[in-house]
Image (cartoon, rainbow, N blue to C red; front, top):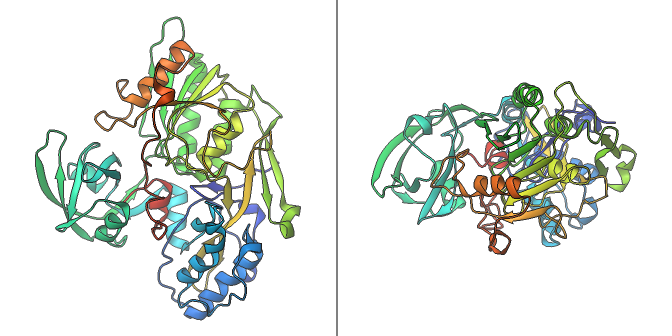
Length: 459
């Protein structure tokens, strides 16, 4: 059994107890994530950075048999460029998680996985309406204070038009506290305004919205907008599920549409809160490393907690931005409980990461280092969930004209209808796939630059 501080994100799952740091350094708490710019090193040379990356990738990378032949530390001029070069063969072979092995700073990574803290404006967005349409605004962030709202469209930043994630990333600038940008934004009513906003330390709120909807003849339907698998979510989850258990609630809607993953330990917790009684002692998920590290392969079994509920049905609201830890949760519960999906397919990241540090360089490498399977052995969902029609997926839009948690919002309305009738509303199964909620597939050259960009798509 494993009880590690692991994390899954759009492409990674990490196990702190399964890996060591480079050169004997201690292993950081595993998390999941992708992209990353690395940041400036202070105690080593560029060559030493590249040597660190190459050494760890040769031994820890899940697809180390696909590394370019003859690769050396001199194959590229920077550590980040070398990492991109090393994962390219696996990406070409459609190992979709491979290119999201990432390099970041130890400090930045620790800040996000512990509390969801990041330097930024505090909003998420997707290409729509001739700009980047705001999908969410982090509570207490500079963006919220400046009047950003879900559904508004960012037209330009410092006069530069932004129509995709690459342009937004470039225009938004580096994650430096105090950095200012002037945004031109179109409101829902069509009017426009300009506002100058400075980046600040933003704390991710892991559960910004939750409520219980009335349902005749039942204690109600619990709805949770779950945004990130981070440590600060654990206490909130335990508290909420204690309330749900005491109320006798058996129908649940878990909204993962903007959840790109996070700590595996938090995925374990939520899995036990939902399935610990119904599936006690049964396999939740399995992790498998490359052949040279197969001795580390393990499985995790469900355990009941004092707050564990007995769900009759669970509906997960998902999008192409739902990944890794979100997929672990959904895939792991599906063999044991009645589970359905509403929205769109998930991203497709059945792989995870460990973290390896070079303290001298101040860097943390999180290579894809294992894959994740459920009790039935399902692990090959690089195209996203569902697979072969399981779980059932009711297509529904992410309706930005309504707030998250509003029962008139299309995805939530479809989820509530499903729980009321036991079937997808007429016409939902025939809906075409929606555009990704996060633009990770817009261009092969675009990569998230920070843990916040990767885990929750936030700037």
